[in-house]
Length: 257
Image 1 (cartoon, rainbow, N blue to C red):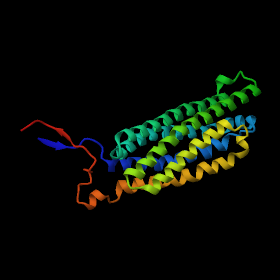
Image 2: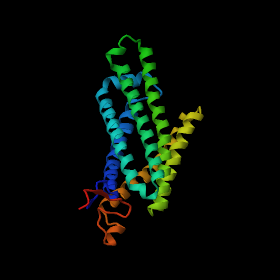
Image 3: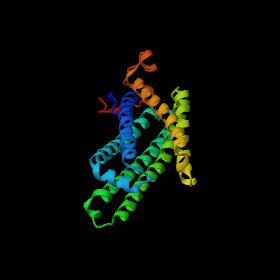
Image 4: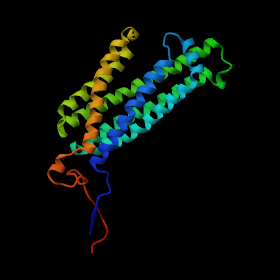
């Protein structure tokens, strides 16, 4: 009887998740902070339409970046499930589902961003008066923002679950706490945006509350994933094959001989 492994190992999953996270980190910064915040003026819809008309190609590149992030998030969801499964199959699966929920809503949000581009400069909205064009464009951007924020609630829950798995089962207590704090910050920010009519007056404060823990935690998580993917592990030190970690179940193929 021949014994082999056909499933992805935790080490390979860590490599995939780490590389995808590293790419996602830079793509998200470009798409959100360079493109979206650079072109959209929340206080001046006319300026937003002008920016989207003159720099429409930049927005298209931003949309492409968001779509790549969308695809990378799917890969990360699967890879983290494989990596964290030893800490509990059900818990790691729930964490993956929450990340996929976030990914789905990101895809919906990007559709609204493309709609904003079409309303601002596309031929389908050519018959709209300037005031109507500006209002509809601003509404599409707001739909993008809020859909993304709702998705970040699911992402925040995902981070909390991953943080608990890391702290309890993977021996990464500090990193687990950081991810948990970042996850709570995402949920708190969306709740504040929804409940506070004067959220815009405190936007910089809330941005800091979210950005600081999320950047520290997710950058640290990326480094942890890359080190786990390419560094030495306890299995290596114990003399076990790197491709057969203790939590892997071999698949039996072939017939009795």
